[in-house]
Amino acid sequence: MATDSEECFDIVDEADQVISRLTRSEVHRRKLLHRAVHVFVFRSNGMLLIHKRSDSKEEFPSVWTSSCSGHVSAGEDYDSTAVRELQEELGVDSVVERLQKFAACPDTSHEFTVLYQCVSDAAVTPDPGEITAVQWMSLDKIQQWLEQSPADFSPAFCLLFRWYMRNAKTPGSR
Image 1 (cartoon, rainbow, N blue to C red):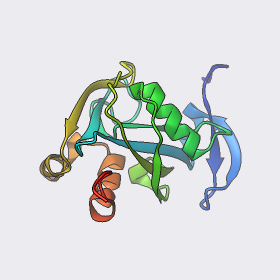
Image 2: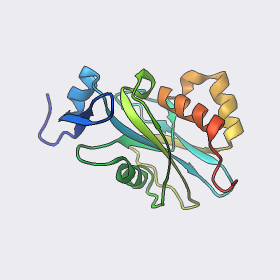
Image 3: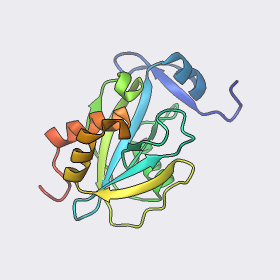
Image 4: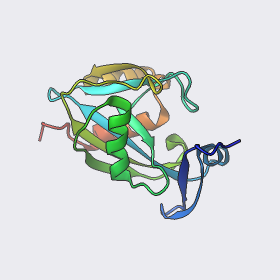
């Protein structure tokens, strides 16, 4: 049962146009289309931060995923969500660069997902309610790990990381 304080999400159609608004639990229970962001945080040396999701997470507990990620709240947009999630989950204030929008699909948990990246050498302060561990790794090491043990990672991270490796350039390498 939803509480008065339960977060609400915009429900969207197949064109990512808002059609309604419901609570998080109802959106997930009914597998309705909604919105999310992922941010890849790089150090200036090219290392990417990945984090292990808390074992209390509703979906994909205790697996590795993007530096930070989160749902777009009702009435919020992708860009402001990316900045908010970066601050809430990692304690990092940074300008983010929008890279790619992905259509909602089972791998993204029925979420239209926008991938961002940023470069920050600031200390990270992971939110212990969301994150149980962090690692800074080279893209090559992550790719090897993902190829050997894809179940160690969230399906959304697998999709986004594989796209990134085919299409994007690591910040600072341009």
